[in-house]
Image (cartoon, rainbow, N blue to C red; front, side):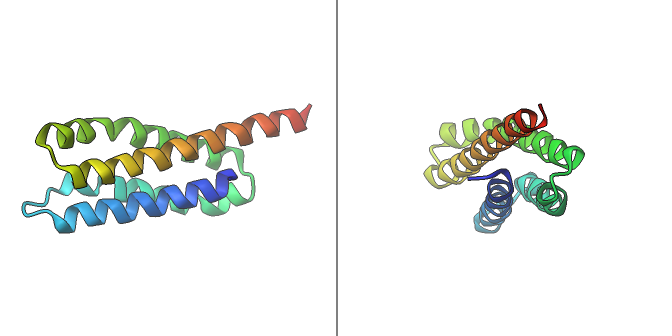
Length: 116
């Protein structure tokens, strides 16, 4: 999977899972929408990533890394509460973020090899 496809997948997963978590909660918290905002911003980087814009790609990677790290606290909370559905949603967001990070790193390595 290339960086563009991985970032699109990650964006949609962040948006949809966070909406699902927010809308399905009996007591929705606005913080549940944080991944949604990251997903939208990463999705807005689409054109830059597609055109191999180095700055935009690095911004998308940074946002992906931030959301990846930020998802571990909600994961721990959902595990401690025994909320299997929330744990599954958060784990899926973490998985797609990791896949996206790997795809970006591979694309950066490939770009460096092609540059030399």
